[in-house]
Amino acid sequence: MVMVDSINIPNSGALQANGYPLESDWVSGQVMGGSGGAVFLTTYNRFQQNTIGTDAAIQAMGGYGKGGGFGGSGGMIYLNGTFPKPTTNNYGADSSPDNLAYFNAQGGKSTYTYGFTKNCQNGGAGTVYWALDEMVYVDNYDTQSS
Figure 1: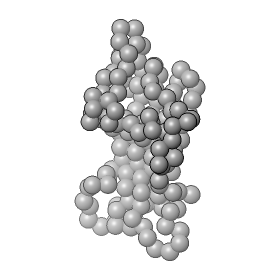
Figure 2 (figure 1 turned 45 degrees about the horizontal axis):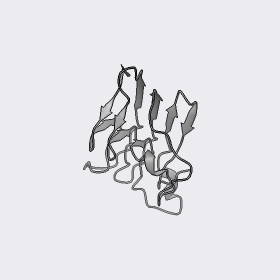
Figure 3 (figure 1 turned 60 degrees about the horizontal axis):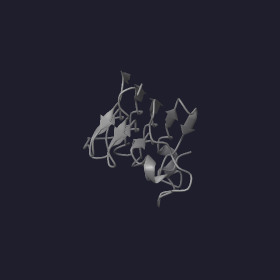
């Protein structure tokens, strides 16, 4: 939990609570993806507004299933302060609001490829919650799950 006046995450910066293993991790054998963690940010914005770089990331993503393992579920991002919110008329190619690219709580993908039920092994979406607006956002991006 972080409670500060303001937060500045520069371009290419990241605040992450991702489950293991990451997509780029090499593991031996079958590994199940861990669930994403939780990011709790409370800012008071008395002296300065929050700034988040255009390619910065705040993540609580589920871990990837490796060697046929299942993906972990997404975590939770809790935002209490003045943070960017999704716009309903500015969707990108993946059907997600363009200005939400840096808030990501999607479930981990699975490498399980046997049979027609392969998408059942992907982790479910986590949540992003804006406390001041009482708004919840749930999006697994391009990861299908059941």
